[in-house]
Image (cartoon, rainbow, N blue to C red; front, side, top):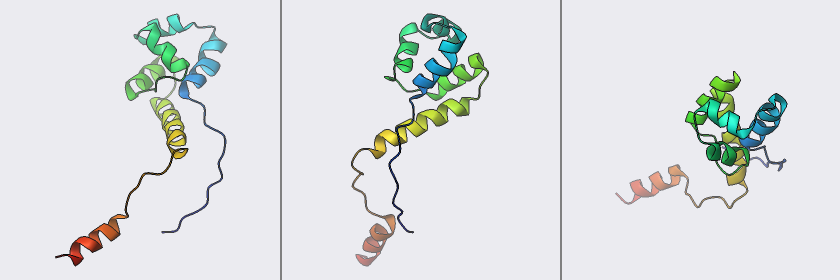
Length: 108
């Protein structure tokens, strides 16, 4: 398996930003109104819209139902954002499984 060099691109938007800019603002819907429609607290929607909380699978299902989208859209947006955040950190210290297996069999 070869390693490729990846160019760093801009950070993908947090799904809350997408929710705010592409759904709430154009529809002139407040956070309070959205929370009521979603069946969650205003605080919960606010933390998502402000990028402080993730869109969970449960919330993705709610968003899909309320805004006539697909839950997978919201889950994918969150996954892309999460991977971006993690990729900005130092990689975890791991060993390839093949080497670990070879060492284990050599000691037997």
